[in-house]
Length: 269
Length: 113
Image (cartoon, rainbow over all chains, first blue to last red; front, side):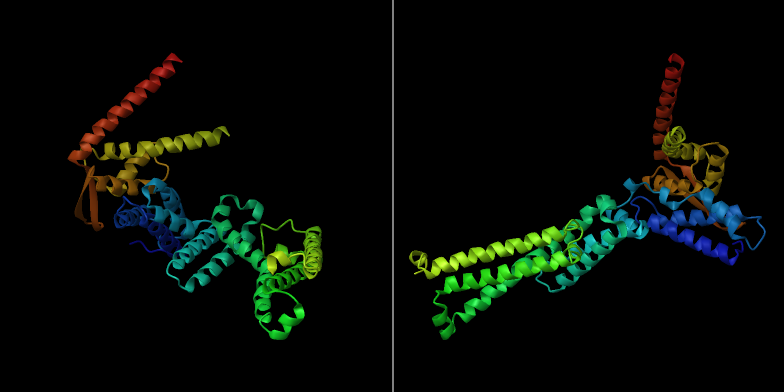
């Protein structure tokens, strides 16, 4: 073996590592045979060169050999080999997209095993998806969006449902419990259903009014967690949420007034 | 634009022709991998990147179109020599015939055009 300079040795090691990476996933090649042929080829090419062989001389030989990437056509690779190669060699943002989607798939598979671990995988998938989104920007996502949007959409829907309906659900549960308390049941002059309904609607309307005002003041609080789906959320939409809350409150006031006047007695006893 | 088109076209053509050229290079003789590359290199505009030859040799061997023999070398480690197998002779004849027809057809079209 000809003697190589330190930098040339490093260059050769890197090149052979690339050779191994690309040949590993081929269906129809004996990678040891190819690697041996390549090593011998390099040795023969370097014969007669002044030793230690410099990196520039070696680079000329490697340039004529070409990039191992072009040696194996995609159709000669296993599908999982193509996927792993993409992860290892594609640009950073695509790698993040593949990792995100893989974590999501593992999380979904774990759902069938009723394992709490799925939450960790979903969280990991969401975090990497957001990192990929930040790296590429929503306009330049291209086909990556098919890998990123499933987890982003799922988390966004869960976030919106929790944000808007979570307090209502909580209020309904608490109201049902409170109505069991004797003096509350007596003083409210309401049946259980009407009491729970009134409490739920009251909390919902007040919460939406407050949420609308907060998001009107700081629209980023809605935009950021829901990226890229709420990128157009602005102050006007925050006010609209407050408006809907106000309408609900007015509707509730009407309901309570009618209820107290016995308009629903026929339905609620 | 024209250059890029020509580059793509000639690269595809070379890739498609390389297996035929390798088989022809070792038909009736047996060559060491590096010598095959050298012979192809002598044929101008044939090899896109020299490394491409080695995976093709490996694939042809796995398909049974070439056979290998290992011999000790005075200059270094044992060398692997490649030659066309019996099965390879069959496919090589068909490939050469196909190429001949394509070349004749292309020449005919060029003359008539």
